[in-house]
Image (cartoon, rainbow, N blue to C red):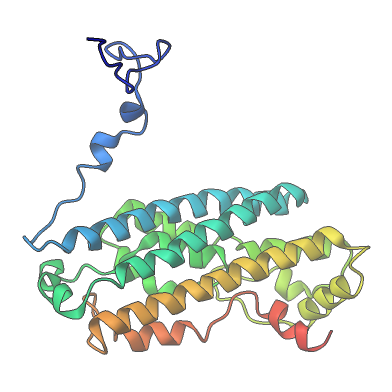
Length: 280
């Protein structure tokens, strides 16, 4: 009888000996990543809750990696490389937005089975989300006490609070190209939340009315509008998911929950890039 061939035999060139070499698992340190989902309850759905938040934090880390480089490119008056970084950030934001849809499969009764295990741990304490908001220009010194228990994180947030945001860098780019920007904006205290300014709106209007002349600044503006819009969608999906799962209960971190998240929706990013659209 003819022996049947095993259709799943490995190709001869596939490497199988990793005693002395780096493997996929070791390169990605999967032993650390995949062993850090430690449930505090025996409830099946706590694993979903942990993994959604852990993967979101990984995506946020990549956003910050891209954003830091993009800001530096703009400050160096080298706008073109930043456009690829912003495009990547936008795609990452879409992944984060989709993650709320996965979390929304958690029902209120299922969440209540393990909610008390969280204590006061809350997404409100996501320092990477704070760093993203700071990088997008929404500074808030009042959140810092939440992180004072960890000196390294606290110092990182303080540095980000006093650093120029991506919008500050974009406004400097307008000035470098000869567009008139008030000195009070160019020399402002970066630790303060950005306030709309008439000279900035006028400069952006000039860019939008002279696209051929200011093509790279126009492209920069549209990239900012894109990531600002995506961030607002993420905020909205966050709010509606929380509303669906816990209703109007207080958050585990002590915030008002849904009411607090709704307030964030009233604080858009890059304000002049939205208001100028009614004047074009």
